[in-house]
Amino acid sequence: MAAVTMKRVVSGMRPTGRLHLGHLVGALDNWVALQRDFDCYYFIADWHALTSHYAETAELVENAMDNVADWIGCGIDPERSTIFAQSLVPEHAELYLLLQMVTPIPWLERVPTYKEQTEQLADRDLSSIGFLGYPLLQTADVIIYDANIVPVGEDQVPHLELSREVVRRFNNFYGEVFVEPQSMLTPTPRLPGLDNRKMSKSYGNTIDLSDDAAAVVKKVRQMYTDPKRVRADIPGTVEGNPVFIYHDAFNTNTAEVDDLKARYRAGAVGDVEVKTKLAAAVNARLEPIRERRAAALARPGYLREVVMEGSKKARAQAIETMIRVREAVKLVY
Ligand code: TRP
Image (cartoon, rainbow, N blue to C red; front, top):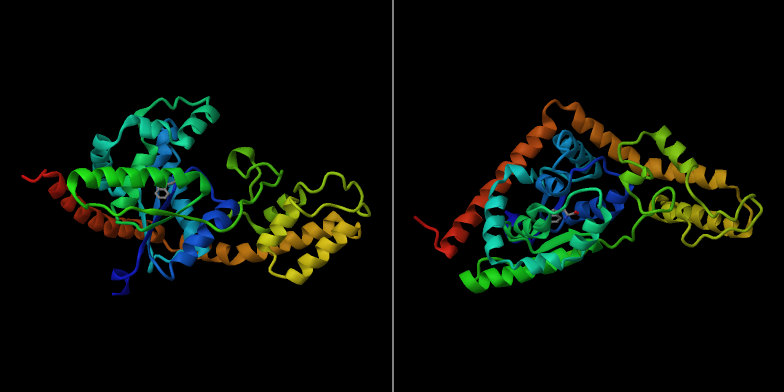
């Protein structure tokens, strides 16, 4: 099979809620494209969701399955890629434990996301070992599959740096056991939220992949634009304007986008026209996703089967790695 010679990609997402356009352009479009040239493993990082949301687990699995429906909607193909749930492959935890033995605590304390999140999420108690260990669990997630490439957002690059350091230290003690994974940055720039702040579920400024056409129209109508343009005949700024960032990201009719930009700059177009055309473009992009998502959800038991089958396949791979690891560590009875 071709998969044997293909390099391996591993990436995961925490199931903390519905997926939105930011996930589409920031991750999923890239995940879909990578399927062509790589042996891809995409997983629900449910344990990682617990590192900060350990007190709210009621919707974890529901969110996970909803996310998988979106992945399939976006074009992740379960026939080509392995879709699984982290907690269904308990070998990740065994490897995580062994990695903990060789990882100095200061390596984890100096990871930028650790400090940032502890400060930003001040209302949560993040003084747990689990939260400190987040990037080390992530290391186990990827090296257990001998991943070469890990597509992630910019904030995750230091996690992969830590992964490589931990791999070097582990290999130094026990021999050449693991491959050093490389991060791959997603080429697309970040989309702002509808209100021009960072796009986030907690700000309520997202367009979700599961929003219907009417919801998209309504949300686009409320989008932040150039605040100086109180009338349609006032020249406006296109650069950094969320409405045009979205046009650039979703409107495939570049002649229409160029025309709208020119007229916006000249004060010769109303916001209503700009937004109506944007909503149509976003809906055109989302419609096939909605259809595939609905088709997946309409098949009874299908999504669960995808996750169970994928997890079985991932687990077989992880079990093989752990045999190799136990031999290297000389834990063989
Ligand atoms: N930390 C990643 C995020 O927040 C999720 C994640 C967990 C992950 N394990 C991973 C991503 C392994 C890539 C590889 O986006």
